[in-house]
Image 1 (cartoon, rainbow, N blue to C red):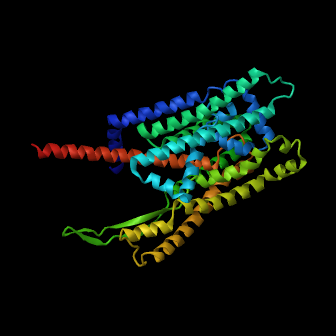
Image 2: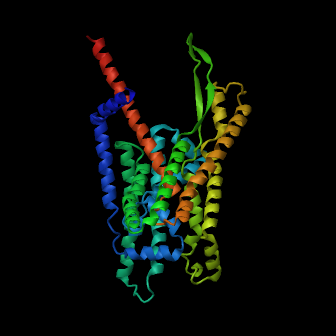
Length: 444
């Protein structure tokens, strides 16, 4: 009965004109993104980027970046940079907000402050997109044969390609913001979600054809699928796990009336930092590969760099270092976004307290201890989810099916967030309907 009632409620909500409008807008924006992602960058040979990926010796890391942009990097489409410049700009400003109080106060100054903060984010996105597009152009120049004459037309083609990549990144930023404003879910996260799942059908089709040609691959593929399902279940648990710290607010007398006296809780998520530590870890892992763009540091020209890159790209060193980096950045980023000292001050200022804990410094120490314990287990879980897909691919020998831990976390997080927003729209529709019914009854 409960399932039937829930199904009927969802069916009624889906028939809501406002909700349907948001769903259609989201689907249309996704369709536009998928189509534009297949428009090639003008003036550049797409095979050049594939040669760079192979020569850089970082196919696994660049493969993760390519996963985020829906295969646009491998095709060198106009959306090859994807939404990553916007994400990097948002992360940088969030970290800087912990250092510069002016940025943090700007977000708390109402609509005007939020618009100024958004303008700074967009400007920083343009700068980072230009930086990344320039780096990609330098990488492509390394693949050009020395015998190719670099005339004015050649450089004009490179400039057009550079501007196309920057414009593509700006288009992605605009499209993500429009989905957030007029669609369902977080637009930026949804675009990454679509980019990740976009290539899965092709990869799965290739694996099934390989199994049909060689039935011995069926067992490793089955083990990989079962393991990925178990990791996905773990990712759901990590995403939803919350430590609820009880908070009480005393009753106050205002204008002769007693108000307040409510009990609440302070949620401390197990995955408080989300996927940001994984992005930081991947950035650190990719940095030496970026240095190989410098002609004097290319492995083919520098024996020391060749030895270092051979060690740096060793599979087990990559796995262990990525795990440790994720754990490290989880603690760092959680401390930035969840300031226990500031929370303790706000609770004391509002008259709130944790039962059995004195307000002020004791509350700060108590929250800090809980945050450390939750973050410790959360960082270990994030690290394992990050490296296990790579270990499984290496163990089963199936390298063509590229599914990363960060991809699974994003898929789970976006799916949960979208469902929660759908539920919020359903609750709002029910509340609006209740208000209309109450109004009709009142004026009869």
